[in-house]
Length: 379
Image (cartoon, rainbow, N blue to C red):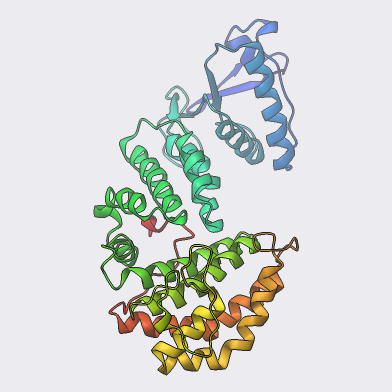
């Protein structure tokens, strides 16, 4: 049909058969106006790469041309490869020849015409996919930057899909950086669409951004820090994860003491039990670090807090020694997955139950789920 001599093409109209010359002759293409590229009949990967190379060469030679890939004829592999290659590159329209037909075998000769194939949705979903996949690593900032770089589609529905993906990626990136005010504002824009599936996150964000006088705010922040540490561990950033866990342990003791009006950075001498040695700081104030803060908490709160300290004092010390070797603490030894697993495992069974019960005691009965790892608005 392309290079055949004589009349290699059969055109049928009813029972009549007309013999026609090859396609370049029919279309009056000069010899320098066309070429052939052979692709393997059953090797899809090689066929795609061959067509991509050909398209790249043509685009270099004809930068201002309009490109149309017509996948009407050819083997199944060739047609599939042409479609895949065309979708891989921007600025290439897809087309198929169609016409009147009485069956699925062929269209009637003489009724054929080119049909432009709508590909904007396919192209957008392909372009968005790697950035939305970054949600699986909680890399919301990476997703937002990539999505923001995509051209806005003409179709309003597709444009809305890109906007919500970009907007929620930005909001969750802010949340992951502890900027809960920006996260809540970013999510509120899409409340009508995601409210039913994101109710728990909206509740958590409102609690995290509530007044400093709200007794539920600090335990919500502590829980958020715990989830944040797990997100860092999911990215294999174990030093960061352990640093957050250390802060969680310290902050929990500080919060528990604050419920009794005790500030660990400015203690009154009467608040220090006789068995605890606390030396004044350079500014003359009495203050304590993590371990002594828990000893104070055991003394002043008694009950479950005292039981936790008595049971976990030695375990806590063991894990803190591992943390102290981190470059984010006092050493130069990277924290590995085994250290993180041991430390977080201990916290899961010992500290977190105490945090849950104390949070419930001040009215925070429902704790936030982990931030999403996939585009939840599509479900």
